[in-house]
Image (cartoon, rainbow, N blue to C red):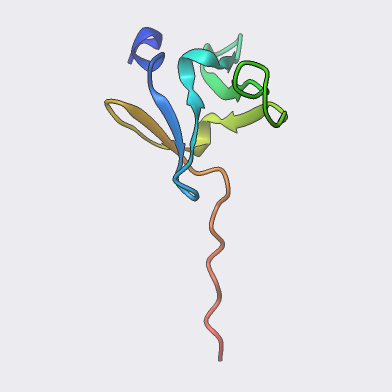
Length: 86
């Protein structure tokens, strides 16, 4: 997949179903030795500088569950499997 094909895709959190941003508005961290994408950085800020400020969100590339035609689904918080109670 080309970077230009990723640009317009929305990032959706699997745990919350929340729209987190668009890849085209984010930065990519690329390993200079391997050329592989290590993470996506979603920028902080509100709508036109208004609203609640937040910190940049760093999404590891390994958190991507699925890349679809319109969106990228991520799971940042891994679900912990509960041990059966005896």
